[in-house]
Image 1 (cartoon, rainbow over the protein chains, first blue to last red):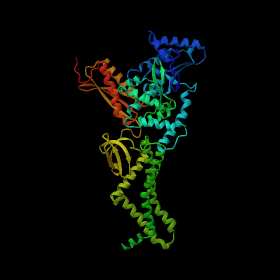
Image 2: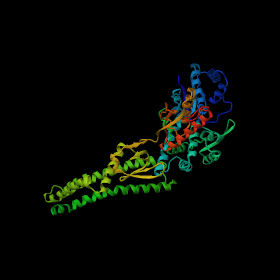
Image 3: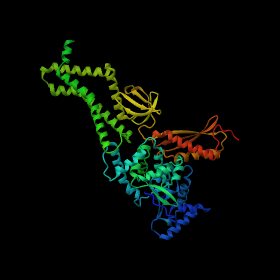
Length: 255
Length: 288
Protein backbone atom coordinates (compact mmCIF):
# COMPACT_ATOMS: atom_id res chain seq x y z
CA UNK A 1 0.00 0.00 0.00
CA UNK A 2 1.45 3.43 -0.94
CA UNK A 3 2.88 5.60 1.81
CA UNK A 4 1.00 8.82 2.52
CA UNK A 5 3.45 11.59 1.67
CA UNK A 6 3.45 15.27 2.56
CA UNK A 7 5.40 17.68 0.34
CA UNK A 8 7.34 20.23 2.35
CA UNK A 9 9.28 23.34 1.46
CA UNK A 10 12.11 25.20 3.14
CA UNK A 11 14.47 22.40 4.31
CA UNK A 12 14.09 22.47 8.08
CA UNK A 13 17.24 21.73 10.06
CA UNK A 14 17.70 18.10 11.06
CA UNK A 15 18.12 17.84 14.81
CA UNK A 16 20.95 15.51 15.85
CA UNK A 17 18.85 13.01 17.82
CA UNK A 18 15.43 13.39 16.24
CA UNK A 19 14.07 9.84 16.22
CA UNK A 20 11.29 10.74 13.79
CA UNK A 21 13.80 11.80 11.17
CA UNK A 22 14.20 9.50 8.16
CA UNK A 23 17.99 9.90 8.13
CA UNK A 24 18.13 8.80 11.77
CA UNK A 25 15.82 5.82 11.22
CA UNK A 26 17.80 4.73 8.16
CA UNK A 27 21.13 5.10 9.98
CA UNK A 28 19.89 2.92 12.84
CA UNK A 29 18.29 0.30 10.58
CA UNK A 30 21.25 -0.08 8.26
CA UNK A 31 23.37 -1.21 11.23
CA UNK A 32 21.12 -4.22 11.78
CA UNK A 33 20.74 -7.53 9.97
CA UNK A 34 17.06 -7.00 9.30
CA UNK A 35 16.56 -3.52 7.89
CA UNK A 36 12.78 -3.75 7.47
CA UNK A 37 12.20 -5.20 10.95
CA UNK A 38 14.23 -2.41 12.53
CA UNK A 39 12.22 0.23 10.68
CA UNK A 40 9.00 -1.43 11.85
CA UNK A 41 10.32 -1.49 15.40
CA UNK A 42 11.30 2.18 15.35
CA UNK A 43 8.01 3.26 13.83
CA UNK A 44 6.16 1.21 16.46
CA UNK A 45 8.10 2.96 19.21
CA UNK A 46 7.24 6.35 17.74
CA UNK A 47 3.58 5.34 17.50
CA UNK A 48 3.56 4.30 21.16
CA UNK A 49 5.13 7.60 22.14
CA UNK A 50 2.47 9.77 20.51
CA UNK A 51 -0.44 7.43 21.10
CA UNK A 52 -2.95 5.91 18.65
CA UNK A 53 -4.85 7.86 15.95
CA UNK A 54 -2.58 10.91 16.10
CA UNK A 55 -0.76 11.50 12.80
CA UNK A 56 2.83 10.31 12.91
CA UNK A 57 5.18 12.38 10.76
CA UNK A 58 8.51 11.00 9.51
CA UNK A 59 10.64 13.97 8.54
CA UNK A 60 13.26 14.72 5.90
CA UNK A 61 12.80 11.63 3.72
CA UNK A 62 14.35 13.50 0.82
CA UNK A 63 17.61 13.93 2.70
CA UNK A 64 18.35 10.23 2.21
CA UNK A 65 19.79 10.82 -1.23
CA UNK A 66 22.05 13.16 -3.06
CA UNK A 67 21.79 13.55 -6.80
CA UNK A 68 25.10 11.84 -7.40
CA UNK A 69 26.07 8.61 -9.15
CA UNK A 70 25.71 5.72 -6.70
CA UNK A 71 23.75 7.71 -4.09
CA UNK A 72 20.20 6.61 -4.75
CA UNK A 73 20.25 3.26 -3.01
CA UNK A 74 19.49 4.57 0.52
CA UNK A 75 16.23 6.28 -0.43
CA UNK A 76 15.12 3.32 -2.54
CA UNK A 77 15.90 0.90 0.28
CA UNK A 78 14.19 3.06 2.90
CA UNK A 79 11.04 3.62 0.89
CA UNK A 80 10.71 0.00 -0.19
CA UNK A 81 11.28 -1.27 3.35
CA UNK A 82 8.90 1.31 4.82
CA UNK A 83 6.14 0.19 2.50
CA UNK A 84 6.52 -3.33 3.87
CA UNK A 85 6.98 -2.20 7.47
CA UNK A 86 3.96 0.07 7.78
CA UNK A 87 1.07 -1.95 9.19
CA UNK A 88 -2.46 -0.76 9.84
CA UNK A 89 -1.70 -0.17 13.52
CA UNK A 90 0.99 2.34 12.60
CA UNK A 91 -1.34 4.53 10.58
CA UNK A 92 -2.02 7.40 10.21
CA UNK A 93 1.58 7.91 9.21
CA UNK A 94 2.94 10.57 6.86
CA UNK A 95 6.37 10.70 5.26
CA UNK A 96 7.53 14.27 4.79
CA UNK A 97 9.70 15.01 1.78
CA UNK A 98 10.88 18.19 0.17
CA UNK A 99 8.75 18.98 -2.87
CA UNK A 100 11.68 19.37 -5.29
CA UNK A 101 13.38 16.18 -4.14
CA UNK A 102 10.03 14.51 -4.65
CA UNK A 103 9.70 15.98 -8.15
CA UNK A 104 13.06 14.47 -9.06
CA UNK A 105 12.26 11.09 -7.52
CA UNK A 106 8.91 11.08 -9.24
CA UNK A 107 10.34 11.79 -12.68
CA UNK A 108 13.61 9.87 -12.53
CA UNK A 109 12.87 7.02 -10.15
CA UNK A 110 9.09 6.61 -10.30
CA UNK A 111 9.04 6.57 -6.50
CA UNK A 112 5.70 8.35 -6.53
CA UNK A 113 4.23 4.88 -7.01
CA UNK A 114 5.16 4.19 -3.38
CA UNK A 115 5.30 7.72 -1.99
CA UNK A 116 1.79 8.92 -2.83
CA UNK A 117 1.05 12.58 -2.13
CA UNK A 118 -1.51 12.66 0.64
CA UNK A 119 -4.91 14.19 0.07
CA UNK A 120 -5.69 14.11 3.79
CA UNK A 121 -3.56 17.07 4.69
CA UNK A 122 -2.63 20.36 3.02
CA UNK A 123 1.11 20.45 2.53
CA UNK A 124 3.24 23.56 2.87
CA UNK A 125 4.16 23.07 -0.79
CA UNK A 126 0.52 23.24 -1.93
CA UNK A 127 0.00 26.30 0.29
CA UNK A 128 2.98 28.10 -1.24
CA UNK A 129 2.39 27.02 -4.81
CA UNK A 130 -0.19 29.69 -5.86
CA UNK A 131 2.07 32.49 -4.64
CA UNK A 132 5.10 31.00 -6.41
CA UNK A 133 3.20 30.61 -9.67
CA UNK A 134 2.05 34.18 -9.33
CA UNK A 135 5.60 35.39 -8.69
CA UNK A 136 6.95 33.40 -11.61
CA UNK A 137 4.32 34.90 -13.88
CA UNK A 138 5.30 38.36 -12.64
CA UNK A 139 8.95 37.56 -13.36
CA UNK A 140 8.00 36.50 -16.90
CA UNK A 141 6.35 39.87 -17.47
CA UNK A 142 9.29 41.63 -15.85
CA UNK A 143 11.85 39.84 -18.01
CA UNK A 144 9.81 40.14 -21.19
CA UNK A 145 8.26 43.58 -20.90
CA UNK A 146 10.03 45.31 -18.02
CA UNK A 147 6.78 45.45 -15.99
CA UNK A 148 7.66 45.64 -12.29
CA UNK A 149 6.30 42.77 -10.14
CA UNK A 150 3.90 43.67 -7.33
CA UNK A 151 5.52 41.32 -4.80
CA UNK A 152 7.92 43.46 -2.72
CA UNK A 153 11.65 42.93 -3.43
CA UNK A 154 10.96 40.27 -6.08
CA UNK A 155 12.50 42.34 -8.88
CA UNK A 156 15.56 43.28 -6.80
CA UNK A 157 16.15 39.67 -5.71
CA UNK A 158 15.71 38.46 -9.25
CA UNK A 159 18.09 41.04 -10.71
CA UNK A 160 20.76 40.01 -8.20
CA UNK A 161 20.37 36.35 -9.12
CA UNK A 162 20.15 37.15 -12.81
CA UNK A 163 23.58 38.77 -12.72
CA UNK A 164 24.97 35.44 -11.56
CA UNK A 165 23.14 32.96 -13.79
CA UNK A 166 22.47 34.84 -17.02
CA UNK A 167 26.07 34.87 -18.21
CA UNK A 168 26.93 32.24 -20.81
CA UNK A 169 29.86 31.09 -18.69
CA UNK A 170 27.72 30.57 -15.56
CA UNK A 171 27.48 26.82 -16.07
CA UNK A 172 28.64 25.84 -12.58
CA UNK A 173 26.47 28.50 -10.92
CA UNK A 174 23.37 27.08 -12.57
CA UNK A 175 24.34 23.48 -11.81
CA UNK A 176 24.94 24.43 -8.18
CA UNK A 177 21.46 25.91 -7.86
CA UNK A 178 19.94 22.81 -9.47
CA UNK A 179 21.80 20.60 -7.01
CA UNK A 180 20.70 22.68 -4.03
CA UNK A 181 17.12 22.49 -5.25
CA UNK A 182 17.03 18.71 -5.60
CA UNK A 183 19.60 17.44 -3.09
CA UNK A 184 18.73 20.07 -0.47
CA UNK A 185 21.13 21.66 2.03
CA UNK A 186 24.72 20.88 1.08
CA UNK A 187 28.23 21.60 2.18
CA UNK A 188 30.68 23.19 -0.18
CA UNK A 189 32.53 19.86 -0.46
CA UNK A 190 29.34 17.98 -1.34
CA UNK A 191 28.55 20.42 -4.14
CA UNK A 192 32.10 20.19 -5.47
CA UNK A 193 32.00 16.42 -5.39
CA UNK A 194 28.51 16.09 -6.90
CA UNK A 195 29.33 18.33 -9.81
CA UNK A 196 33.00 17.48 -10.23
CA UNK A 197 33.82 21.16 -9.94
CA UNK A 198 37.30 22.60 -9.73
CA UNK A 199 38.63 22.73 -6.20
CA UNK A 200 37.68 25.95 -4.43
CA UNK A 201 35.01 27.06 -6.91
CA UNK A 202 32.09 26.17 -4.67
CA UNK A 203 33.99 27.79 -1.76
CA UNK A 204 33.85 31.06 -3.65
CA UNK A 205 30.43 30.59 -5.22
CA UNK A 206 28.34 29.66 -2.17
CA UNK A 207 29.36 32.65 0.02
CA UNK A 208 28.65 34.88 -2.97
CA UNK A 209 25.16 33.36 -3.29
CA UNK A 210 24.74 33.85 0.46
CA UNK A 211 25.65 37.50 0.11
CA UNK A 212 22.78 38.08 -2.33
CA UNK A 213 20.48 36.02 -0.06
CA UNK A 214 19.87 33.22 -2.52
CA UNK A 215 21.26 30.70 -0.04
CA UNK A 216 21.72 30.77 3.73
CA UNK A 217 24.30 28.82 5.67
CA UNK A 218 23.57 26.90 8.85
CA UNK A 219 25.27 24.42 11.13
CA UNK A 220 23.68 21.02 10.76
CA UNK A 221 24.85 17.57 11.79
CA UNK A 222 28.35 18.81 12.42
CA UNK A 223 28.80 20.61 9.11
CA UNK A 224 28.15 24.02 7.61
CA UNK A 225 25.47 23.56 4.99
CA UNK A 226 23.94 25.97 2.51
CA UNK A 227 20.23 25.88 1.73
CA UNK A 228 18.21 27.93 -0.75
CA UNK A 229 16.15 30.63 0.95
CA UNK A 230 12.38 30.64 0.63
CA UNK A 231 12.46 34.25 -0.63
CA UNK A 232 14.76 33.29 -3.49
CA UNK A 233 12.80 30.22 -4.61
CA UNK A 234 10.55 31.90 -7.22
CA UNK A 235 13.56 33.60 -8.81
CA UNK A 236 15.60 30.39 -8.71
CA UNK A 237 12.78 28.34 -10.23
CA UNK A 238 12.21 30.88 -12.96
CA UNK A 239 15.92 31.38 -13.63
CA UNK A 240 16.62 27.65 -13.90
CA UNK A 241 13.63 27.16 -16.14
CA UNK A 242 14.84 29.80 -18.58
CA UNK A 243 18.53 28.91 -18.53
CA UNK A 244 18.62 25.15 -17.91
CA UNK A 245 15.15 24.18 -19.09
CA UNK A 246 14.42 22.62 -15.69
CA UNK A 247 10.83 22.96 -14.58
CA UNK A 248 10.21 20.91 -11.45
CA UNK A 249 6.91 22.66 -10.76
CA UNK A 250 5.62 21.24 -14.02
CA UNK A 251 6.62 17.75 -12.88
CA UNK A 252 4.65 18.33 -9.69
CA UNK A 253 1.63 19.81 -11.42
CA UNK A 254 0.54 16.35 -12.51
CA UNK A 255 0.76 14.87 -8.98
CA UNK B 1 -2.72 49.50 -75.02
CA UNK B 2 -3.02 53.24 -74.47
CA UNK B 3 -6.58 52.71 -73.35
CA UNK B 4 -5.46 50.16 -70.82
CA UNK B 5 -2.76 52.50 -69.46
CA UNK B 6 -5.31 55.28 -69.18
CA UNK B 7 -7.61 52.99 -67.22
CA UNK B 8 -4.79 52.31 -64.77
CA UNK B 9 -3.80 55.96 -64.35
CA UNK B 10 -6.82 56.76 -62.25
CA UNK B 11 -7.24 57.77 -58.60
CA UNK B 12 -8.88 54.49 -57.39
CA UNK B 13 -5.92 52.51 -58.74
CA UNK B 14 -3.53 54.96 -57.08
CA UNK B 15 -5.34 54.48 -53.75
CA UNK B 16 -5.16 50.71 -54.22
CA UNK B 17 -1.41 50.80 -54.91
CA UNK B 18 -0.90 53.13 -51.97
CA UNK B 19 -2.72 50.70 -49.66
CA UNK B 20 -0.55 47.81 -50.88
CA UNK B 21 2.60 49.87 -50.33
CA UNK B 22 1.47 50.64 -46.79
CA UNK B 23 0.64 46.98 -46.20
CA UNK B 24 4.22 46.12 -47.14
CA UNK B 25 5.87 48.53 -44.76
CA UNK B 26 3.54 49.67 -41.98
CA UNK B 27 3.30 46.42 -39.95
CA UNK B 28 7.08 45.98 -40.12
CA UNK B 29 7.66 49.57 -38.92
CA UNK B 30 5.02 49.21 -36.21
CA UNK B 31 6.61 46.08 -34.79
CA UNK B 32 10.02 47.72 -34.87
CA UNK B 33 8.60 50.67 -32.95
CA UNK B 34 7.10 48.29 -30.35
CA UNK B 35 10.43 46.50 -29.97
CA UNK B 36 12.24 49.78 -29.30
CA UNK B 37 9.61 50.80 -26.74
CA UNK B 38 9.91 47.46 -24.94
CA UNK B 39 13.70 47.65 -24.90
CA UNK B 40 13.53 51.10 -23.30
CA UNK B 41 11.07 49.88 -20.65
CA UNK B 42 13.32 46.90 -19.83
CA UNK B 43 16.32 49.18 -19.59
CA UNK B 44 14.48 51.46 -17.14
CA UNK B 45 13.59 48.41 -15.04
CA UNK B 46 17.29 47.60 -14.71
CA UNK B 47 17.34 44.69 -17.14
CA UNK B 48 20.20 44.25 -19.58
CA UNK B 49 19.61 44.10 -23.33
CA UNK B 50 19.70 40.30 -23.55
CA UNK B 51 16.40 38.68 -22.73
CA UNK B 52 16.57 35.53 -20.65
CA UNK B 53 13.26 34.46 -22.19
CA UNK B 54 14.57 35.15 -25.66
CA UNK B 55 13.42 31.88 -27.16
CA UNK B 56 9.81 31.89 -25.99
CA UNK B 57 9.60 35.64 -26.42
CA UNK B 58 10.87 35.63 -29.99
CA UNK B 59 8.73 32.63 -30.82
CA UNK B 60 5.44 34.16 -29.74
CA UNK B 61 6.39 37.51 -31.29
CA UNK B 62 7.28 35.86 -34.61
CA UNK B 63 3.98 34.03 -34.68
CA UNK B 64 2.03 37.17 -33.92
CA UNK B 65 3.92 39.25 -36.49
CA UNK B 66 3.46 36.60 -39.18
CA UNK B 67 -0.27 36.44 -38.53
CA UNK B 68 -0.68 40.23 -38.62
CA UNK B 69 1.47 40.60 -41.75
CA UNK B 70 -0.49 37.91 -43.59
CA UNK B 71 -3.79 39.41 -42.57
CA UNK B 72 -2.81 42.92 -43.60
CA UNK B 73 -1.44 41.68 -46.92
CA UNK B 74 -4.56 39.70 -47.74
CA UNK B 75 -6.74 42.65 -46.81
CA UNK B 76 -4.65 44.98 -48.93
CA UNK B 77 -4.41 42.91 -52.11
CA UNK B 78 -7.75 41.16 -52.11
CA UNK B 79 -10.21 43.05 -49.98
CA UNK B 80 -9.08 46.65 -50.64
CA UNK B 81 -10.19 46.82 -54.33
CA UNK B 82 -13.65 45.52 -53.43
CA UNK B 83 -13.96 48.07 -50.64
CA UNK B 84 -12.80 50.90 -52.91
CA UNK B 85 -15.23 49.76 -55.58
CA UNK B 86 -18.11 49.44 -53.15
CA UNK B 87 -17.68 52.56 -51.05
CA UNK B 88 -15.84 55.04 -53.25
CA UNK B 89 -17.15 54.18 -56.71
CA UNK B 90 -20.60 52.70 -56.03
CA UNK B 91 -22.98 51.69 -58.85
CA UNK B 92 -22.65 54.92 -60.76
CA UNK B 93 -22.53 53.99 -64.48
CA UNK B 94 -20.35 57.06 -65.17
CA UNK B 95 -17.61 55.42 -63.10
CA UNK B 96 -17.47 52.22 -65.07
CA UNK B 97 -14.08 53.21 -66.52
CA UNK B 98 -12.70 53.68 -63.01
CA UNK B 99 -14.10 50.31 -61.89
CA UNK B 100 -12.58 48.60 -64.92
CA UNK B 101 -9.22 50.17 -64.13
CA UNK B 102 -9.40 48.95 -60.57
CA UNK B 103 -10.35 45.42 -61.65
CA UNK B 104 -7.47 45.46 -64.10
CA UNK B 105 -5.05 46.58 -61.38
CA UNK B 106 -6.37 43.87 -59.05
CA UNK B 107 -5.98 41.13 -61.66
CA UNK B 108 -2.59 42.42 -62.69
CA UNK B 109 -1.43 42.61 -59.08
CA UNK B 110 -2.55 39.07 -58.44
CA UNK B 111 -0.92 37.65 -61.58
CA UNK B 112 2.26 39.69 -61.08
CA UNK B 113 2.56 38.68 -57.44
CA UNK B 114 1.95 35.01 -58.00
CA UNK B 115 3.81 34.41 -61.24
CA UNK B 116 6.17 36.94 -62.70
CA UNK B 117 6.81 39.37 -59.87
CA UNK B 118 10.30 40.52 -59.09
CA UNK B 119 12.62 38.29 -57.08
CA UNK B 120 12.09 40.50 -54.06
CA UNK B 121 8.32 40.23 -54.34
CA UNK B 122 8.51 36.49 -54.83
CA UNK B 123 10.83 36.12 -51.87
CA UNK B 124 8.55 38.32 -49.84
CA UNK B 125 5.41 36.40 -50.74
CA UNK B 126 7.10 33.01 -50.39
CA UNK B 127 8.64 34.05 -47.09
CA UNK B 128 5.40 35.51 -45.80
CA UNK B 129 3.49 32.38 -46.73
CA UNK B 130 6.11 30.19 -45.06
CA UNK B 131 6.01 32.32 -41.92
CA UNK B 132 2.23 32.04 -41.89
CA UNK B 133 2.50 28.27 -42.21
CA UNK B 134 4.93 28.23 -39.29
CA UNK B 135 2.55 30.30 -37.22
CA UNK B 136 -0.15 27.68 -37.55
CA UNK B 137 1.58 24.33 -38.17
CA UNK B 138 4.90 24.90 -36.35
CA UNK B 139 7.19 22.44 -38.22
CA UNK B 140 10.11 24.53 -36.94
CA UNK B 141 10.20 27.38 -34.46
CA UNK B 142 12.55 30.05 -33.20
CA UNK B 143 14.92 28.44 -30.72
CA UNK B 144 14.65 24.95 -32.23
CA UNK B 145 17.78 22.99 -33.03
CA UNK B 146 17.23 22.15 -36.67
CA UNK B 147 18.78 20.86 -39.84
CA UNK B 148 17.72 22.84 -42.91
CA UNK B 149 19.23 22.30 -46.34
CA UNK B 150 22.21 20.45 -44.81
CA UNK B 151 22.90 23.20 -42.29
CA UNK B 152 22.46 22.43 -38.59
CA UNK B 153 22.03 24.94 -35.82
CA UNK B 154 19.71 26.89 -33.61
CA UNK B 155 16.99 28.98 -35.27
CA UNK B 156 17.73 32.59 -34.35
CA UNK B 157 15.00 34.23 -36.38
CA UNK B 158 12.40 33.44 -39.01
CA UNK B 159 12.19 36.53 -41.17
CA UNK B 160 10.16 37.19 -44.27
CA UNK B 161 13.28 36.94 -46.41
CA UNK B 162 15.69 34.79 -44.41
CA UNK B 163 15.74 32.14 -41.71
CA UNK B 164 18.86 32.67 -39.58
CA UNK B 165 20.65 29.70 -38.03
CA UNK B 166 23.46 29.78 -35.49
CA UNK B 167 25.73 26.77 -35.82
CA UNK B 168 27.63 25.02 -33.02
CA UNK B 169 30.67 27.04 -34.13
CA UNK B 170 28.72 30.29 -33.78
CA UNK B 171 28.56 30.82 -37.55
CA UNK B 172 25.43 32.58 -38.72
CA UNK B 173 23.74 31.04 -41.74
CA UNK B 174 20.98 32.80 -43.67
CA UNK B 175 18.67 30.54 -45.65
CA UNK B 176 16.13 32.17 -48.00
CA UNK B 177 12.76 31.62 -46.34
CA UNK B 178 10.84 31.04 -49.56
CA UNK B 179 13.24 28.23 -50.50
CA UNK B 180 12.16 26.23 -47.43
CA UNK B 181 8.82 25.38 -49.03
CA UNK B 182 10.46 22.52 -50.89
CA UNK B 183 13.01 21.55 -48.20
CA UNK B 184 13.06 18.79 -45.64
CA UNK B 185 12.73 20.39 -42.20
CA UNK B 186 14.33 18.52 -39.31
CA UNK B 187 13.77 19.79 -35.77
CA UNK B 188 15.51 18.10 -32.83
CA UNK B 189 13.15 19.49 -30.22
CA UNK B 190 10.02 20.56 -32.16
CA UNK B 191 9.32 23.64 -30.09
CA UNK B 192 9.96 21.97 -26.73
CA UNK B 193 12.76 23.02 -24.41
CA UNK B 194 13.99 19.44 -24.14
CA UNK B 195 15.26 17.05 -26.76
CA UNK B 196 16.31 13.43 -27.02
CA UNK B 197 19.95 12.67 -26.50
CA UNK B 198 21.47 9.38 -27.61
CA UNK B 199 24.73 8.27 -26.01
CA UNK B 200 26.80 5.22 -26.84
CA UNK B 201 29.18 3.46 -24.47
CA UNK B 202 31.44 0.55 -25.34
CA UNK B 203 32.48 -2.39 -23.21
CA UNK B 204 35.05 -4.93 -24.25
CA UNK B 205 33.56 -8.04 -25.87
CA UNK B 206 34.75 -10.22 -23.00
CA UNK B 207 32.87 -8.25 -20.30
CA UNK B 208 31.03 -10.61 -17.97
CA UNK B 209 27.30 -10.52 -17.26
CA UNK B 210 27.96 -8.86 -13.90
CA UNK B 211 30.13 -6.23 -15.55
CA UNK B 212 27.52 -5.51 -18.19
CA UNK B 213 24.91 -5.11 -15.47
CA UNK B 214 27.25 -2.88 -13.49
CA UNK B 215 27.89 -0.71 -16.55
CA UNK B 216 24.16 -0.37 -17.16
CA UNK B 217 23.57 0.61 -13.51
CA UNK B 218 26.31 3.23 -13.71
CA UNK B 219 24.84 4.74 -16.86
CA UNK B 220 21.37 4.91 -15.29
CA UNK B 221 22.77 6.63 -12.22
CA UNK B 222 24.99 8.96 -14.24
CA UNK B 223 22.06 10.10 -16.37
CA UNK B 224 19.84 10.65 -13.35
CA UNK B 225 22.58 12.46 -11.45
CA UNK B 226 23.15 14.99 -14.21
CA UNK B 227 21.49 18.35 -13.53
CA UNK B 228 20.81 18.64 -17.27
CA UNK B 229 18.36 15.70 -17.32
CA UNK B 230 14.72 16.31 -18.16
CA UNK B 231 13.16 14.19 -15.46
CA UNK B 232 9.64 14.21 -16.84
CA UNK B 233 10.69 12.20 -19.90
CA UNK B 234 11.46 8.47 -20.12
CA UNK B 235 14.94 6.94 -20.30
CA UNK B 236 16.09 3.76 -22.01
CA UNK B 237 19.26 1.72 -22.19
CA UNK B 238 19.72 -1.14 -24.60
CA UNK B 239 22.55 -3.42 -25.53
CA UNK B 240 23.85 -4.52 -28.87
CA UNK B 241 26.96 -6.28 -30.04
CA UNK B 242 29.43 -4.97 -32.58
CA UNK B 243 32.37 -6.99 -33.97
CA UNK B 244 34.73 -5.29 -31.51
CA UNK B 245 32.63 -4.30 -28.52
CA UNK B 246 29.43 -4.55 -26.53
CA UNK B 247 27.57 -1.35 -27.19
CA UNK B 248 25.29 0.19 -24.59
CA UNK B 249 23.04 2.86 -26.03
CA UNK B 250 21.36 5.24 -23.62
CA UNK B 251 18.45 7.42 -24.63
CA UNK B 252 17.50 10.25 -22.31
CA UNK B 253 16.15 13.77 -22.67
CA UNK B 254 18.22 16.85 -21.96
CA UNK B 255 16.16 19.58 -20.25
CA UNK B 256 17.42 22.33 -22.52
CA UNK B 257 18.28 21.27 -26.04
CA UNK B 258 21.22 23.70 -26.10
CA UNK B 259 22.90 21.78 -23.29
CA UNK B 260 23.08 18.50 -25.17
CA UNK B 261 26.89 18.45 -25.31
CA UNK B 262 27.20 19.35 -21.61
CA UNK B 263 24.73 16.60 -20.73
CA UNK B 264 26.66 14.03 -22.76
CA UNK B 265 29.90 15.21 -21.20
CA UNK B 266 28.42 14.91 -17.69
CA UNK B 267 27.19 11.37 -18.24
CA UNK B 268 30.32 10.22 -20.07
CA UNK B 269 32.60 11.64 -17.35
CA UNK B 270 30.62 9.87 -14.61
CA UNK B 271 30.62 6.62 -16.59
CA UNK B 272 34.37 6.71 -17.25
CA UNK B 273 35.15 7.60 -13.62
CA UNK B 274 33.12 4.70 -12.30
CA UNK B 275 34.33 2.32 -14.98
CA UNK B 276 37.90 3.10 -13.93
CA UNK B 277 36.99 2.79 -10.25
CA UNK B 278 35.26 -0.57 -10.69
CA UNK B 279 37.76 -1.84 -13.25
CA UNK B 280 35.18 -2.33 -16.00
CA UNK B 281 36.77 -3.46 -19.27
CA UNK B 282 36.10 -0.82 -21.90
CA UNK B 283 36.32 -1.52 -25.60
CA UNK B 284 39.80 -1.79 -27.13
CA UNK B 285 41.28 -2.65 -23.74
CA UNK B 286 43.39 -5.77 -23.79
CA UNK B 287 42.44 -8.48 -21.35
CA UNK B 288 45.16 -8.96 -18.73
